[in-house]
Image (cartoon, rainbow, N blue to C red; front, top):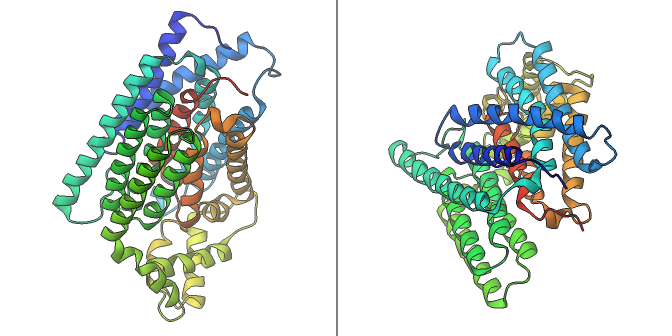
Amino acid sequence: MILESKKSVFIYNLSFLALVCAISMDLFVRGYPEKIFYLVSYVSFIYTAIYFYKHRSIQSLDKPALFFFVTLFLVGASRLSWSLIFKHTEFGDIRSNYFTGGKRFMIAAFLLFYFYQYRTLLKQNILKLSLIIMFLGFFMSLWHGDLTLSKEGMRDKWTSDAATTGAYLAVIYSMVLIIAIRACFKDGLISVLLLVAAFLTAMGMIVMTQTRSAIILAPLLYAVFFAYYYRCVSLKIKISLVLVIVLSASSVVYLAWDRISQISTEITEYSTNNDTSIGARFSMWSAGVHSIEPSLLGQSVDQRYKKAIDYIDQYQRGNPEAKRNVVYHLHNDLLETFSLQGICGFVSLMMFFISGFYFSLRKGALENYGTLFIMLPVFILGIADTVLIQSNTVLVIIIALALSFPLMKKKQH
């Protein structure tokens, strides 16, 4: 156990609160979340150095956790290196996102180490205050989304680049929130009521985006979370919450039915009409596989774009929707990374997911930390979309992972 001075305890709890504020305002405020993230990162660098100075040997460190942090650094290094090697490109925004996202992944290795290694320093009153701040941020995001939706009359995206990204951020944010609820109030009635409030708010935000993957995934995540962490509550409460989840999810599906019902139609008609959202994904995935450059460091966006466009024109009937979207990404994180950052990028990303899931699922870990419920949506949503390309999304994921460490039980079984 870490035994630190009052100064260290104060700094750790202040850093925790700072990241809570950063993630809570990310969907409706630009600039400040990044500044807070970098300020806390400086603290993490100092305390990581202090830790290794005081503990010269790494034998006592949690090896799965250490491996997880190393893979974060490797993901960041591969992305940063790629953006520097292939810096001359017409697609400056893509290169910029990977450059910034790569730096943030590398910083995450130190930030997560600090928040994990010193996690016993978090105070209960700070946790309660953090929960209030996160709920206020969630409600403010919902209100901001409603205002934006009423003015623009279109799918909401908050401060993100697209409606789908906004939905993914809402899902990840809501996972941190329910982890905090569970850590603060265990499985009592207050905890269940707050879980319901978080779920309803999350679904309200998701329906504003009309994002089909988030509409399907969010209720499933909440159901699994409740089934595992609230398995000791009474049968009446279990049945009540199941009804709330089913009714709320059904309402959201009803409100977004026009888009959801298109999934089956678009898949069925793919052979005759591929100019659709699902059809574009199929075409882009095929073009992405074709455009992979099996080298260590990958290729430039310009090279991949030319290969993908040529393939779509030749083998995908010139799919217009696919050609419009392939300019930005391939709608799949692993394929996107492999096609640009080559073998190094692909292997590092696979190691990140493998180590993250192992860290989250090893004996005693699932009960102790909520990391799994951050990793799951990132991985699942990344199968049908590109989640990790946006530097702001990387920021939110890193903060969510950092905040998840001190929120569960501290002692391994």
